[in-house]
Image 1 (cartoon, rainbow, N blue to C red):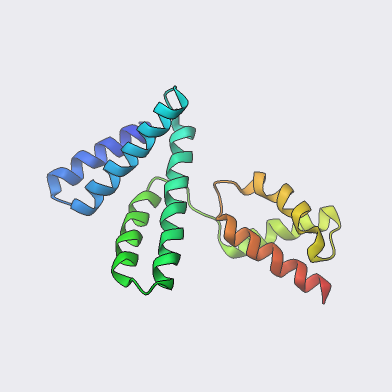
Image 2: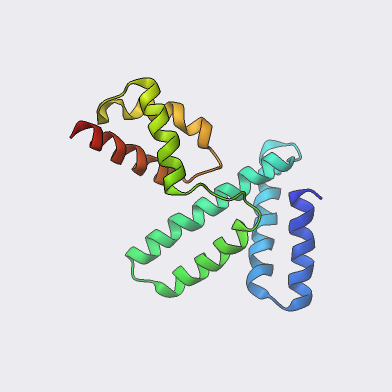
Length: 151
């Protein structure tokens, strides 16, 4: 079963169960997928659908941060619920420790010794970890590792 078929099946299940949060989130995902298809002029395969889902999850994470800064805990809760639904379809994200191992290997391989080489490390690391880890966390880990090397 494709990711899109799974989303549609789960949408039907949520509608039958009266789960409005899941129903509304899945409808918005379907709309985002459809909009991407209209914009590109072609039907998305599973990898394209996963890219849309990743983008939607990223938007929810950014909204959570913004709402927390604004003191809007009511909206934070809504975004967290939507993010939880979206994450059901995404692959498990890497932990900080797993990212540190990969990043340390790339830093060692490139021979980078200070923060000035961060762009070089990120350029090599991001293609490896795209879709497997959050970009902000990767950036934070690399920054921490390079600062430790400077000391």
